[in-house]
Length: 557
Image (cartoon, rainbow, N blue to C red):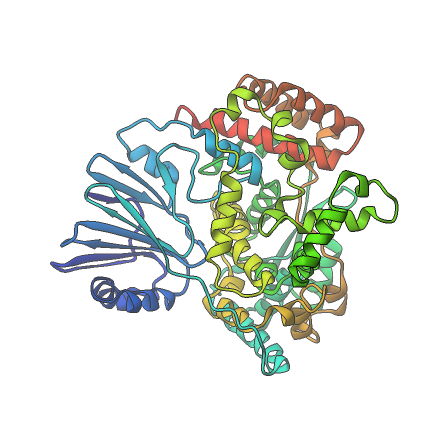
């Protein structure tokens, strides 16, 4: 028996199969064809799947083979959870719906807690509950009547290596973006506007097609965190109807528990609070749908790590005997301590770690050390290698020949599907507004794969192609601004606001009793936050406090 707990867009029944689509309606008219292809020709089925645009969950029940196949969209815009129980499979875009529909009690998955501490979210296919799983983007899961599972990669795009005419691609880029934004408009529509390249592009295209173009920003009275001046540059450039909310720490304190407990699973991205208040602010101004700018960095190589890793990948262009000699000569403690040689030693030491593991060099767990961070009892229950294995599996599934393309493909899952999209989707849901991601439109994803990695990121110039494509459309100040994140000044506020501090301290005292993280590390984080670096240790405190608050609100529900 298959139980699906979502509003069905369309379903098709015949003696051989049942096909169901939730979300995107682009496949509705072809649902019969998709089901037939699934039964008769897997290559045609994969092609049909790749033609579906938007966010969706697709279900195909094979009545002859007695199997259920479930797949979500190529980037995981739609979360999908499933649980196999006795002779039934429960599937939903809501983990809480799966839990409430199950006859069994759900136990907390200790491995998921470790993965959360590693990634600050819980990447698919793991979930916070044992034996409950989450669909990975672009993969199908087939479950038979004996509850055996098999998976298949349906989406590993071909990345073009050489461009015939990069100037033509630059001209095409804005046209594709404009079409994507136009396709996602609705009557009471607005846009998030942080002032960065992506939100500015989306806001500008909104202004071309929607009058008045309404844009919304969150500001902070904290040095280094406020981007509203850049947002105002874009608003003035496109003459949008712009609204700014300056978020106060007391407001954040009042919503802290609600935000932490609203997610289906523990979720530690601190910018979720800002996203919620910005969406709520837009809702109060009559907006029903918000356009988000997520995805541009991951399509067109805008993150600093892509450029940094290119430097280390140069090491592998050297003949292997030379690499072996450099490794033997430089990669040791003696050389690392010699002035003038230490940088070369550090370079070789880091380069010797292959991608994608090298991306985690500055992960907090790796810096602090497993034994320093976690209790022995907790470590005995988990596989500490699972996060790296998950990263490695996704990285190997990429069809790209260039490390930048492979890192982009990696980030489509771990940065977008598992993190940013969860944040924006759930916080907009909590605020009561719909959200759309035009920069993750199928047409733009396909277009980005036509732009070679060395055109997206020539040398170490982040977003070079995209900036050239947008020159003359976006304000020069926007194109030339330094990159800035959309973070919350939680660490700063924790020192200044008594309410927020009390919530955090109470949660941490209860978290200590769970025997997950060593008590000495918690005390060290609190001391260092007060005396050394409010932002850095504030993030660690946020991660632990959010986990504790989520567990308090969901363990017994």
